Image (cartoon, rainbow, N blue to C red; front, side, top):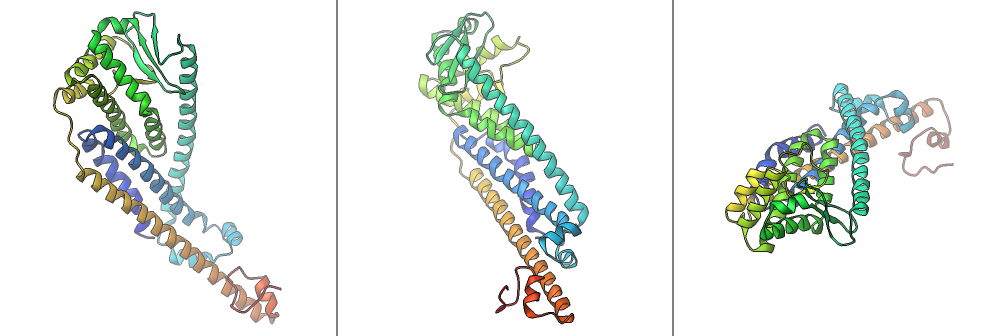
Length: 335
């Protein structure tokens, strides 16, 4: 446990630093899935390791040890984690849990807001055109979702660019990109080190929608023009709607990518990330197994000590079991 409990923490730090940059250069669809898997696995590994570290400290509290029926001296002897590290792990875990609850509340409010907006926008179809001069275009997730475009935005684009814009927003809805966003936001709430990964994920989602729009209209340059003009038209706005929008992400990089060839599929970065995630899971599993063995040894030691005290007092055999834990001697039955 001395080494394995820290493996998920190290893997999380490494991926939070290394993963965002290559993800921006990969084909956007596999990159989005890779970042989502990375966020999920590293969050579980991070939380599990912190929980194991916190347990090693809590288990040494005499009242907790008495309830669990294990020997504190044996636990301390077998536990290589310093109490200060265990306390720090417990505090970080507590802060992450509080942050997760707050982020979940914000996410629920966002979903409710989207549903209210879907109900308020005019019309019953997928597309809703609002009568305002402010250039706006975004997708509202829901069941079904809606695409909201203002007349001001439509006036800024020609027919081909309008088709590209609608194809972009339709890709957000069809691929359920809001679920990817929710995963990254919640993961970053638990572990702030994953915020760069969440930022890269937002860019990848916009690139994914760009590529699908380019496939739909049959021209990457048309989509690049639509993205650029929509961004210029919206640049005077002070705030953006909390929804997936064609003007989201790093617009210059998106336009540059659209003016070039489609990104090739690279398997090496994804394979390397998968290897690190496997190492994260293996480290957590090994640490959990070592922790369970450590507790079993401490319980057996406490059981042996209790039996020795009962034997020294000349108590009958069935009393040994009554004062002992579940790890009693073979052949003895509880009476």
